[in-house]
Amino acid sequence: MKAIELTQYGGFDSLRVIDAQKPKPSANEVLIEVKAAGVNFAELELTKGRYKIPKTLPFIMGFEASGVVVEVGSKVQGVRVGDRVTSPVSSGGYAEYATADANAVIPIPPGISFAEATTIPVQGVSAYCLLKYGANLKPNSSVLIQAAAGGVGLYLVQLAKIFGVDKVIAVASSKEKLDLVRSLGAHLAIDYADPSWPYKVREATQGNGVDVVLEAASGEVGRESLKLAAPFGQIVMFGAKNIHDTLPPETIQQLIYNNQTLRGFNLPSVPRQKIAECVPALLELIAQKKIRLFANSSYPLVEARAAFHALEGRKTIGKVVLIPGQMR
Image 1 (cartoon, rainbow, N blue to C red):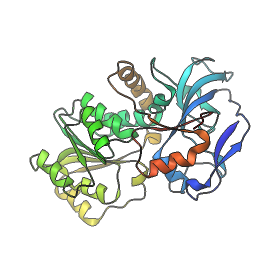
Image 2 (image 1 turned 180 degrees about the vertical axis):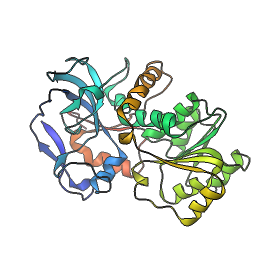
Image 3 (image 1 turned 90 degrees about the vertical axis):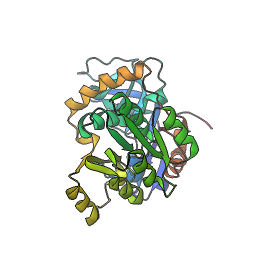
Image 4 (image 1 turned 120 degrees about the vertical axis):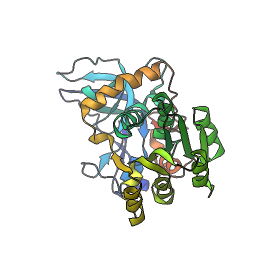
């Protein structure tokens, strides 16, 4: 089978197309014929050695994939050959076939494409769990969402409304992205390239700041976001970009003086039972068309480098996917 292997931590130029053996599922796993593999920003950081996973180089890339179950392990129950599924994968999703823990497999709702389904296991579940367990949202509150047109951000904008947030403030780049998040329910959409964007956030909150800051941008934009938290407000930091960031002393002082709460969120650290509690509710919202899925940027599997280049250049909206067998 064709697969994409990372040979060294030298950026996405270290990716190469290889011919690999089809993986064999263990007793508790299923084998998926991959129809679409999701590309994540964390994987971009992984190619640079900035987001480590417990694998020895070289290895096949890919955190999750969608496709059709073609084989099940001897102890698997509840998943059958022929099922359309999406899942975190154990053998690497950037391949024509991948194995997955049968207990982590998510059925694809009717009417959802394989590409759209790749948004569910990481971005969708992350956003739902973040809001349910990490943000402690309250009715009639305000929330600031950075990277609002990204994979997680688009879910957050929509779910925040569903969770009862009164004022959703979305920060993104480009007119196309801002128009999109407005159409999904953001009360205010701001371009972070505008130097006055923090002022616009404060103006929209009558100078009080926002009750919840969902911060994934890092760098200067991230630091400005932290300053916009209201007294007794919450700041939730998540995403691969924040792993290596540091907080300046004035931010620590701000947290103390304003009685603010700073939290981190990482989906892999959430207990499996808590994740399992979120998945049915998320799938129901998707099946009812209360959440729109975005996976409009697709590349052939063998053009993984081009997909990463587009992702790094912020040229994409929503999920970026790799399609085995697709030709340009």
